[in-house]
Length: 134
Image 1 (cartoon, helix red, strand yellow):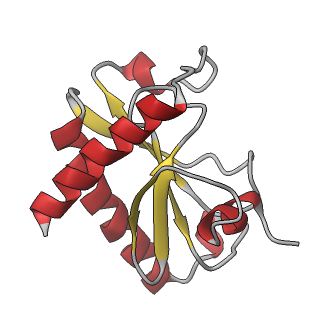
Image 2 (image 1 turned 180 degrees about the vertical axis):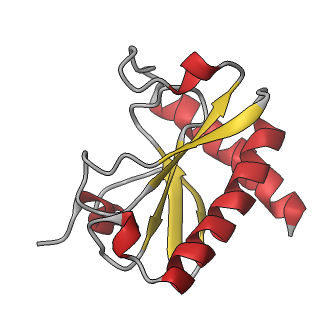
């Protein structure tokens, strides 16, 4: 059975896509800890990030770096925090979270509840900045 993220990549479940290439997909988290919280996933269904081969893991980080640069340009923040937790969905993924202080990336705090319109607007801003990096 396909994971939730594989179903999002396939378009079976709607998402606010930020970036995509032949190997990776980035989309906004619908339960973000901060505005612009983005998930980066490989299209290859792999449960644990450190089960990816070294080449793919390196390419995933390079893809995430490009997304993070666009996030930083689009969302007011000091940095883009990165977290790998991997317990919520059995599909390797990286959380990219715009942060100004350390507590901005705490996953046990209350989540934001943005509307679909707010998520769409945030995704648009990040994509626009991603296009400027090309």
